[in-house]
Every structure is written in structure tokens, then in C-alpha cells.
Length: 445
Image 1 (cartoon, one colour):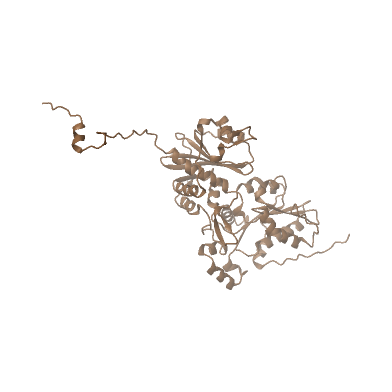
Image 2 (cartoon, rainbow, N blue to C red; image 1 turned 45 degrees about the vertical axis):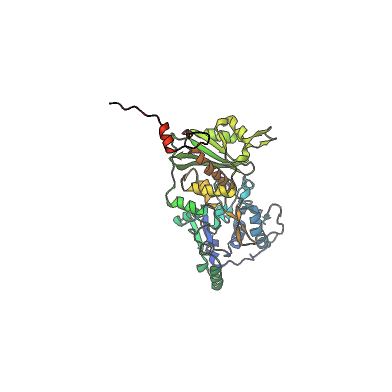
């Protein structure tokens, strides 16, 4: 069969040419809005697949959510891969390539779909919105046996994990390509458009979305100011376990979603967050074993109010009763059912007293930084309720902690009742009558 030459229907913007010509395995692209990052990413994956000499190459575009990945990149992928493949798989969001390879679209919210596959290359779009464990637990292992490459892309959203990737790229130019595209420098958007956007957005929004400023406040973040304050004050650092104080836990319980657990100590009015855990789909026994495996001296395990509900699947037992089998019923307590906004306010107040262990609580710290209100695209404003994503359960568990820690610092001194003086039927007394009622000591010479 005669070879057929097919040309790409993609012409890269000049700003992305260094990206397509790179020779490094790791790359980081920090790009302003409407720079064309997704189109460049999709075509780079197509080029990588066509140039790969390994059998059955596999390349993936990964966004924080599968629905988002499909909405943002799937049509682009089918369009630009069209000359090479006429059979895209709509249900699996994959495109077969003529060399036996595949181009795939995934969401990091369903990381299990990525487990067990190999990858020759991956583009991780809006990496700052990924759950931090997805890269280390799922994507990085998928690249190992094929020595695949990865590109981390996105727009700044505070000093989150994407910022850390950018810092790693900046500090290791021999191993990383770092491409930063600011609207004022990229020449992609007309100057008139940039100035109009500048007038219509707040200074913080423009700095973040168009000038790629990681220091700008994250819009809609519930605890953004408090977490910046904790970092500024040096309260995110190594925090040691103090064996003379009890370790308490605060939970948010899920099954299909994450169960999140904060481990904290109350030390002279300070809240020491010394450990954190989050996982999904695990049994009650798993969490019982997890608690026991940590060599802490435990105080109270604080559970959300719905942990008292009994389920038929658990033979009529509540989560409290199931955990009590391994942890002891006397160590269980249920946090009062506060209104969401009251709980968030309690969390804000508690954050001023919090010291976080940067290593063991890393994922929890990132979740608190990124916990945001939901954005209403129609009204162009933030709603009162939180956006439900990977940060939600961590923040809910932290709210449990914020309410629980006050119970841990209540004085245990028994207060004596105030006793009054009763005189006559009308319970009225004069100062002279009070004086007469006081026992007098006889004078001694």
C-alpha cells in the first residue's frame, strides 16, 4: 500500500512555537485566558502520537472534571485529528490513530479510569484544580514504563499545587520548559480588548486571569485571607505531636465521596493540626484500623450529626455505633448540627489559632486554600453555597473541628450555685437586717 501524506490543519500561534519545539520531558504552561492553550495542547498530543515510535502509543488530555474535558477539548480533538482518524469513540472519548495508537480525554475527578493504563504523554489542563493525590498516585505511575512526558497547564489560582509545579520548573531550567504567557506580553489579544477587560474586572481578577499573577487573591475562596495569614505568620510549618496532650479527630464521612479526617491537639488555646487523611470507597473497618495504626494518645473522635443515623445495610447500626466497636463508644461525640454559614464563620475564627503541619496536612491545607463558593454563570456572581469538588469534604471536616475544639477547652471546674438570702414572706431585706444576720465573733482581750 502506498504511503499517504496528510498535513496537520493546525497553525500554531507564535507564542506556542517554543512549546511544540521543546526537547524536555517536563513542561509547565502558565497562560492567560483565551491564549489558545487547549488548541495547542490537543495538537501537541496529535503530533506526539504520530511521531511516537513505540507500539500502540497512548496520549491523554486530562482536565479536572470529565464533563469539563469533554466540553473544552473533545470537539477540538475530533476536528484536528479528523484527517488521520474517521472513527472517534464518543462513549469512551477516544480517537484511534493510524499507527495503532489512541488519543484519550479524561477527567481527574474519575481517577480510577486512569488506573492500570500506560501513557506516552499527557497534558494536565487547569492542574491547580486537580486533587493533589491524582498526579502522584495515578498519572505519574502511568508514565513510568514508557518514560512518557507530561505538560502541566493552567491559569493561576493562588499559591496552590500548580504554583509549586511552576516554581519547580522555574528553578530547574535544565529539566523543565517553563512558558509563561501574560496578556500584556503575548500579543495574542488586541490591546484594545485587554484594556476593556482591565476596566471591567477587579484588579485582582485581571492580575490573576490575564497577567498570570499567583499572588492575587482567589475569587470566591472562603478561607483565602485566613490561609494567607497563616502562611504569612509562619503557622504552616513542621508541627510535632505532643505526647502529653490528647489527639482529637474531626470527621466528614462519605462512601462514594471522600471521608476526611483532621487530627488535632489543643495546646494552651492553640489548635495544632498534626495530621490529615482523606480517601474514598473504604469501609468503617479501614478507618478504625487507620486510627489505631497511628501511635497517638486519643481523646475524642468528633463526628458529624448525621453519623447517628441508622442504615439497613449496616443491620440497623449508625456510623457512631460501627466505629465504637473498634474505638470505644465513650470516645465518640457528635458535633451539633450548625447552619453551613455558621460553621464557615466558626472555621474562620478557628483558623486564627491554627498551626498546620506542612507535610502531613499538605492535601488538607491545599483544600482549605481552594474551597470556593459556586459561581453562577448566568448572574455573573458567586452563590452563597460552596462548589462541590475535592475540597468539600476536607472543609466540612474542618468545620466539625472548628466547633469541636471549643468543647475541648471548656473548663472542667464545677461551679457552685449562688446562694441568696431570704428574709420574710416578701423576700426583701435591708442592709441593717443583712448586717444583723452575719455571725459576730466575741472580742477577746
